[in-house]
Length: 174
Image (cartoon, rainbow, N blue to C red; front, top):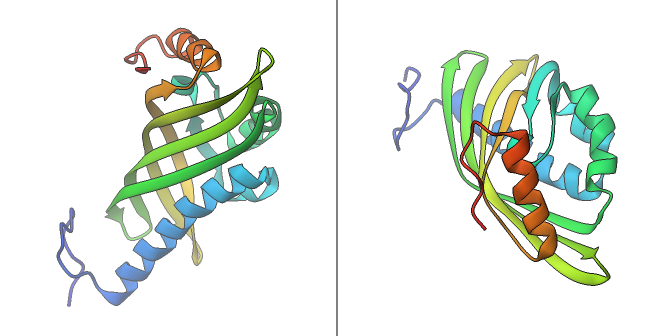
């Protein structure tokens, strides 16, 4: 059996390529757990050192894994907890050791804002590039495309921030 043309769209892939799919899916799930656990060392190791990360559309910053790992503790310090979920993952291989992906995200957070507890929800897509180095797949690019931000007063603040940090992208609904 030869490698399946992309997109696979249900065609059977070789066992080796199916192993790659599983490794990338596990990477994407592990990312959410690293964020929820606030394990920034683990989180940074999921990226190639030269990776491009863009969180502008959710009111964040753009940078390298090292820059974002330094920024994340302060940015997420406001939340008492978070639950990052990913689903509907599509992976397309672009070479023997490279792939692109898009995956839906749902991120629920708990926080206190202006003296009141709030739930803060973010929904959208991650647009990813992956690169294999040795026997390990890593993110080489991750862009968060935020489609909606809901919750309470804090959600309105984040929506306004997202419009300012990513003026060239559609404003998140909410």
